[in-house]
Image (cartoon, rainbow over all chains, first blue to last red; front, side, top):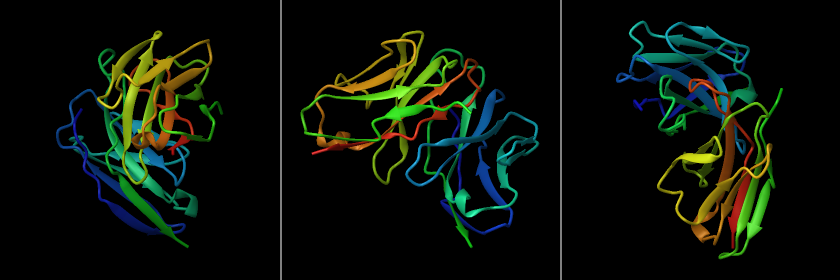
Amino acid sequence: DAKTTQPNSMESNEEEPVHLPCNHSTISGTDYIHWYRQLPSQGPEYVIHGLTSNVNNRMASLAIAEDRKSSTLILHRATLRDAAVYYCILRDGMNYGGSQGNLIFGKGTKLSVKP
Amino acid sequence: EPEVTQTPSHQVTQMGQEVILRCVPISNHLYFYWYRQILGQKVEFLVSFYNNEISEKSEIFDDQFSVERPDGSNFTLKIRSTKLEDSAMYFCASRADTSHQPQHFGDGTRLSIL
């Protein structure tokens, strides 16, 4: 799987938007971009995923660059509960055999939210 | 919203003892996973399970580990003879068919080996 690069940490103020970047310059045409987050003392939690087009759900938005070599997770209004480690992970959407979709976690971006 | 449940939330075991960690995946999911996270470190993949057999395992998943889906709902991870270094959070995950669908994780079992 292609590698991703994220900043180690970011800070945000409560109720302000947060843009979490991820670089994936070696992404292949069939790689989906997945975002998970891990709140303190909890398991990873799915946030959002996309292939080419920008995606929105109730938790966040995912903006994908036109060349797909980078993406940005957008939290529109950060709350204290959004303080977590955010992971950007690529998964091959065509890989029905082999690894069967196991996720390779990096160190992610630790997001701190100030009141 | 359906969720993955894991029991127990905390397990304390003497070194050398066998331990079984239990998971109930989301009911219509077909792929099942175990991950672990040693305190302060990254989440690491252990094993994936599909169609009643292991489909992939990492180097961590040695002969001391085994997985089983004994009935239609439970998915278990057994560590036969625990070591101190097995102390970690263990997360179960499941996902629906098609490989780009997300995985859903449980809140984990904290395993402490004394």
